[in-house]
Length: 482
Image (cartoon, rainbow, N blue to C red; front, side, top):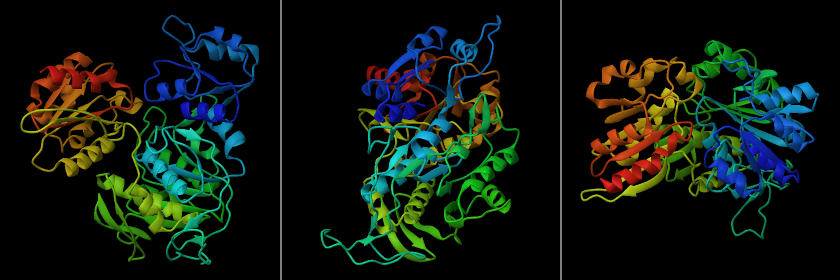
């Protein structure tokens, strides 16, 4: 919703927004854009008299214990018969129409992969519009409208592309492909649209290029089982035109089941040994193979198999718009990840090795495991990793995946869990880890536990899909004073 507000502001609208507990980096970005943030959902905001209310899916018709509405502003909008719409519908009608939409769906890696594709297309001269669920550091903003541009690419064409003569004005051989007009890259979430539209958000986006990055059970608050999510993904597949392309992770059985329900578009795969696009080498330096032949090499600052797969997906998606794997791989060498994706927040000097504190958005057990694996590859086997996390997502709060927590934390030397606002006991869930796991019911106590165990050379990664009570700053300050 913050990115959507930025798009509306760029389009010339006056924009205000309300929410509860907005936290950085989005709060800082919105204020920098001159977008007024109002804390809470009071009905007196009707006095702003907007032309349209755009409703996020956090809003509901829920009631508090005493019977008062949880979102008084929504009730006032309904009572007054004022115009309102959902965020995804507003995007579809006012931003995406007439564009070549590249939509990135999946349980994990949506934000990072969306940012990668956007950076590749930017470097290729396409001036893409984008909406990312975070702040890509290459751009410094989470959304922009973009513009019209022709696409260019180096290297041999793949598939049925047409080779054109090089442009003499450019210092290297290039190929001009078709003018696809304005393109827009969007993070395509399977979560529901709004309280009045229970379809997944991504069915509104009508992509011409769809990336299906991975798929496993999540969002236990709205989906009964994995099959229910697979059905929503198939709804997305149904919206891709016959002249479009679906990029699918060849390692995911769940995605194979989705396509088996019916597919009417070209399909390209990535990731598995028999996929169209595969990788050879370590995640931080690997060759890109197309049908077994080397077409590019990636060397970058990112780590982890999950990022290698994200990179393959981005290269494959960009190739559909005429950007060769060589250009795409070269762009990824200068890719800076999204804020809060293994973001180094600071280091504390210690004799024998500095202590590094990282911030990551991981909250699903699989994401926690892959994040730790990526950090392990970066830090090495001889350095300790301290994993600090809070089960904050709706799925984790329900305890649906608590049994997977020891598995997700297996690669860490020590684990520290914030148990605030949980209806289940994380101590019981983590008992199998023995002394390697600690639990605290408030942030200050959690910081104290981590500082007591931290030593020179450690890497500390804090994982949450929220602000985590500013734990990163508190940890750095406490470590400096220790």
